[in-house]
Image 1: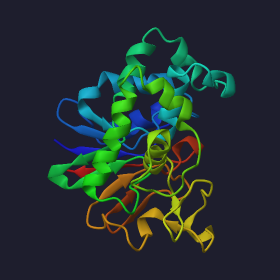
Image 2: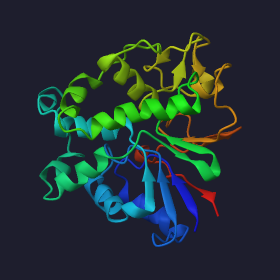
Image 3: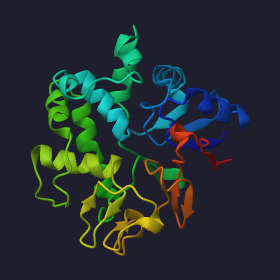
Length: 263
């Protein structure tokens, strides 16, 4: 009954199946964690979704920014005029089972906490100033909107954007939801004041001195909790002091990363 974790698949279906074959993954007894960004850019987003949906009782996946963008295109139609649906996602919109796939995707969490392992799974990471309780509570705020048919269209209309960049408990409405979403799905660097910098995607050795990787922020609250994440292809496979990044840039021609979390 092993638990495996895999980085951003992004429609690289065959790479995923090859990795699972290598470890003889058995959905009847094993569990697969996915760091989000199941779709987009790669050649087989629809096939990837269908496969994961078929073994949905054996996987844990969080939502990535590309997954949310897909849902935004699906559930807020005016966005399709501003963001054209690329050839990587078009097959999903033409699929007969698209409703089942998209509804399933919309019910996935932003963060997963495995109590037995005291381990968190998120797409981009955990905002440094949030405690465990705050992390789980704020994730639920967005998750509840995503599954509400009346609320999610308005949320997706207002989801895109880089502001606000600094967390405050006084944030309300869509600004609050946008910050929470950005922190879980788009964050890489923060400033010394813990503002999100969502533009810089560079490797650690190339970053400006004014920026700090979120997991190296001096006042980070969850230093004793292992965190598994993806999103940061330039960082690649990275394992340091309870931090595990699994995005090795498979969609850019590199090898997909799969690790064993529990034997």
